Amino acid sequence: MEQPELSTLDELAREARACTACPDLPLGPAPVLQVSAQARVLLIGQAPGTKAHLSGRPFTDASGDRLRAWLAITPEIFYDPTKLCILPMGLCYPGRLPKGGDCPPRPLCAPLWHSRFLALMPRIELVLLVGSYAIKHYLGPGLMTDHVRRGRAGKFWPLPHPSWRTGHWERQNPWFTHATLPALRAELCRLTAQ
Ligand code: SF4
Image 1: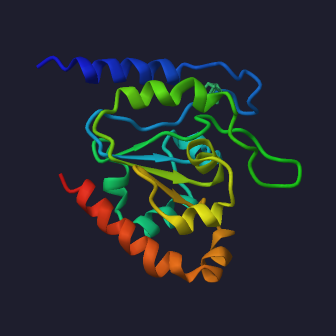
Image 2: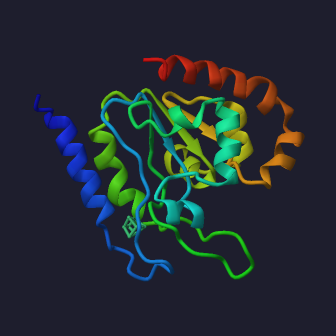
Image 3: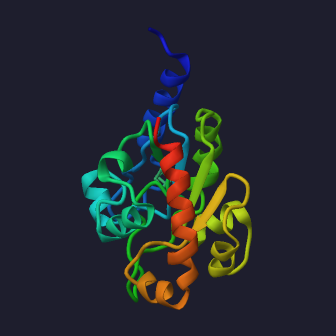
């Protein structure tokens, strides 16, 4: 049966995967995303790391393991595009900073692609904003911790970036483990059940 919405989203995904708007990326353009018109949850992260760049799948690293543990969802659900869409702030690996850590997502990327994808994902009820770049873009300025502590804002749910550095932050902010995550897990369980 013909599904116009699906084919349109597929076309947009193909267009994004062929994007070469940043020819100076250190490993070249290689957009990493996961989309479908069926999912009710969208995860907006930062940008792929080197492992995700090489695998072509988002969060195939220790940060992904931590994120899946926070969300209490299996890799099978996490990588099922009909359950969860993933659209980073920068679709391509941005390179390393001289003092370590990855460069910020390319600033032109989200304005170029996000609204076009969101228009073709009408079932999205919950948008997880993972990390300060996504939080700032969608919820405005402010400390990441303050945004996360305030919790869900409409369909947006801000979260820290799940890097190893966040372990210290979690110990300093136990409400995240004891209140935020259980509430988030219950909502994800509901939204990924069908
Ligand atoms: S980072 Fe975004 S805008 Fe730049 S090449 Fe990749 S997909 Fe295109």
